[in-house]
Amino acid sequence: DGGITQSPKYLFRKEGQNVTLSCEQNLNHDAMYWYRQDPGQGLRLIYYSQIVNDFQKGDIAEGYSVSREKKESFPLTVTSAQKNPTAFYLCASSIDAEYYGYTFGSGTRLTVV
Amino acid sequence: DQQVKQNSPSLSVQEGRISILNCDYTNSMFDYFLWYKKYPAEGPTFLISISSIKDKNEDGRFTVFLNKSAKHLSLHIVPSQPGDSAVYFCAARGGADGLTFGKGTHLIIQP
Image (cartoon, rainbow over all chains, first blue to last red):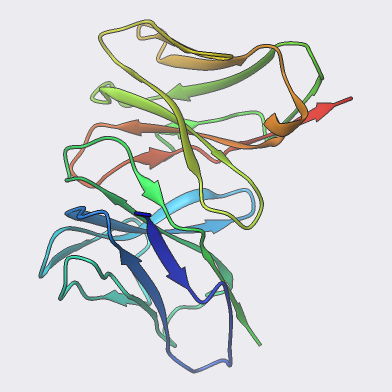
């Protein structure tokens, strides 16, 4: 079954620590995206990648970093520089940057303790 | 500045009646619009879409209407069912950096 896998589903981090959220897809999609969801804020774009070894900042990239070394994988690192990291993080992919439909993963809930 | 606006954070509708979710946009470069449905602690799933060259698209109980002159689209669900209770996101496409999402509307279907 093709899809996007995000892991873990729940993640707890101590203040000052970096943490990496995993996103893997087996859909052979070129484009991948990271969104953050906060109550009352909808989905806000953190980073996106249209092709391997290339990625661009979204609207709220500060305090985050990504890599795209493989087509299937687009991990997101939440660094200690991110002031309010507690949120629900969603990874998505699409066939290419011009295709309009996204497939989303099931999300990772990150909580800073 | 929000380019995609869903001004109703929540909407309560009786089972069997019509649910109408609204979405306004400001960017005239948007050329494709989508609706996603999201349950708690899950990722959004694609529901229905419409190109800017059309004014209506229908898929079963779901119909999306687009009024380009008013920069307004709406999602109609009829008849509404309990499983329709979810958050609905309106999204628009018009640039290279992907979809722009609204803040979502929480639809509650009451028995």
